[in-house]
Amino acid sequence: MLSDGGLILKLDSHSNSRDEKQDLIVKLNKSKKYIYKLSNYDTLTGLPNRKNLVNTLNDSIKEGNIDGKAIFLMDVDRFHSVNELYGREVGDKLLNQLADRMQKLFGKNTVFYNGEDELYIVLENIPYFELRQFGSEIQNATAEPFEIDGRRLYITVSIGMSHYPMTGQEIETLLLQAEIAMFKVKNSGKDGRQVFLLEDAEIVRRKRQLEFGLKEALENAEMFLVYQPKVILHTGKVYSVESLLRWQHPKLGLISPSEFIPIAEESGIIMDIGYWVIDEAVRKTKEWHNLGYKIGTSVNVSAVQFSDRELVSRIVETLEKYDLNPKYLIIEITESVTRDHGYAEEIIRNLHNEGLKVAIDDFGTGYSSLGLLNNMYIDMIKIDRSFIFDVPTNSKNVSLVKAMIQMGKNLEFDILAEGIETSEQSDFLIENKCEFGQGFYFSKPITSDELTDYLQLNELIK
Image (tube, rainbow, N blue to C red; front, side, top):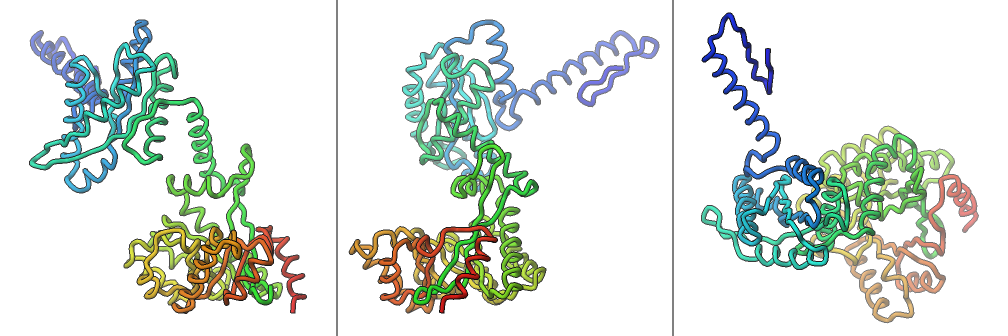
């Protein structure tokens, strides 16, 4: 009994003639070839795949003829847009035409490998110092439009390059290096080329370590919140706090949110983290209420979490879980989430209808539409710290802050200034009718126990 890829053949000398056996053997060989092709070639483009590439290069190492091999990983920028607009079939034809164009550029012996939406190009006998020049030639060759099914498509490409033996001596290492270099181009604006650099490996290694660590950070209680008081400027009394996320990595130490939040958004884990933050902030706020401190709390909601259709219902469930009045919870969003005007207005209106408050964080630093703000259920704008930093000495920022305060008042928003560090800044804001503020002048972000002590002292302020 022979079994291969689901094809079962029974060879029995008593029931099969020589011709029948031969016929079955032919079918078996065809089956093996089909399975090999399925395993080593992309079914849509017909190009060799990444597995084929690894095997081929490993064979080259065994044969001792790999010196001077250059690996180019070419990614079509915004390739997903081609698939979305014209369909996957057009995208596959684009990759095939791209491979044909590269073959005309480098010769018929050049081998191309399909890496899903990318192309690997392996060139022989390429000196390391000529990698950038070859990358430039690839970019120039892709600048001309592609004609596909009556459509003219213009593309740009991001290219990552590695080299045996100059950047690595193992196949998987070389492929990873090309990927790292390519993503560096992507992150710097696309449409470029980059040779792998050793310092890039450390950056990616740390990023991957953080990405894997995020998956267990909540389970291992590595995440915690700190709280920065918000005060009524003319009295100094605390009326609310901003709940801020921190991560104590077991090996890397305290990780800044500016580093791990983008990674959490890319990996999708931001949803779990975001709802944990809301739960923890509401729970602690209820504890302070039980101690007699009727303060509010604010939480930052990322653009990814804001797009969740269950956002409002899950927040309401959390408030009911801890029996906290919705008016004590402020949802802080950045201006960028308001780009989809219709959706943003719907969500903010729903939050407002549930009794929650909404604040625009880092106001003045991102995308905004004054017309949209005028029609949305916004309760507060927070003037970004970059505008407060050098008032009242910087006349330009003085004028901007005054204009923001006046605009906010005209739109009937509460106004809070972030990043207040001096008495001069506080006095300037009070003089210009800014009601609320937060910053190191009043308090840095502190733990929940430290905040309880702070609130006790703050009660003495009249």
